[in-house]
Image (tube, rainbow, N blue to C red; front, side, top):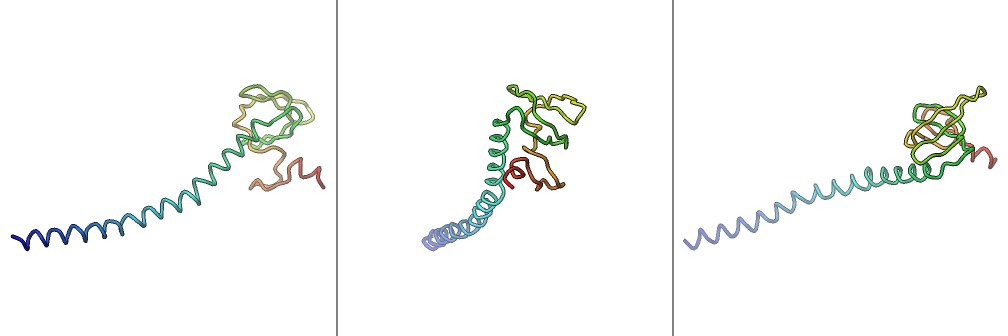
Length: 119
């Protein structure tokens, strides 16, 4: 009887150590995902929201669909842009604005209006 109780206690103690060694890699994996994927994505979202809230009349923008234009009016949730020389005006929601300035390349690493002025 005493040996059965002692052996049961030993297996429980060994089980706790193995449980910790199983959980530790998952905790490390979650931490890596947080610092490499989730945190940078949240920073990008905050930067995009800040850029969209600071839009003003006269800024040149690019939409997520690739339309380039100059802002004519800014409303609470929408903006009105003017495209091209024929002065066509279109209204977009603010979340549809991709960048401030124009994109010269497909991956979005082009020059913006601000960087052209500094040269």
